Image 1 (tube, rainbow, N blue to C red):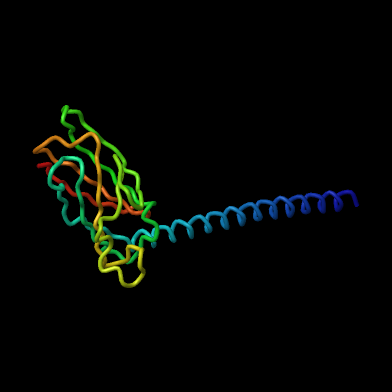
Image 2: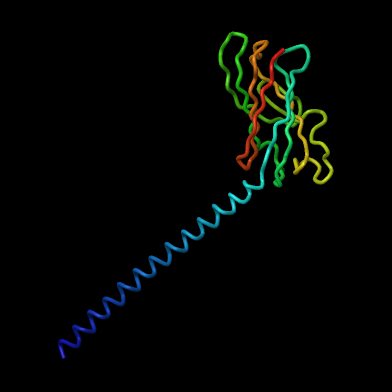
Length: 172
């Protein structure tokens, strides 16, 4: 009789240990599957994004204000322009290397800020105020200190979907 009770105890312990291990394995697998799903969703959003910098020019009469043109060649819209990154790298008039991220303002551009140019997003037909696919955006920038004459300013524009492109603008 003692052997039978001991046998039941051993079998019961093996079943409990097996069920605990299986439960841990199942919970880990579910957690990994959820993480993989989130990563896949993020990659799908990013894969639909594309940006193409067209050109840039300084405004006449100075080396601080210039404009760049960018095309949204992807399938993702950019609803909040304030989430975009605009970074400028250049040499100032004192031969110092300058690297700065410009802040977005909706109007009234100041030093080290960017905004939409007067023409804004064109053609802005589908979703007014949102940079949609196949639309061109005109960005006005102001860099301070001024860019050294005859040297390039590298402008990098990035979207919230981690897609970026760059263009070089030569100071007059």
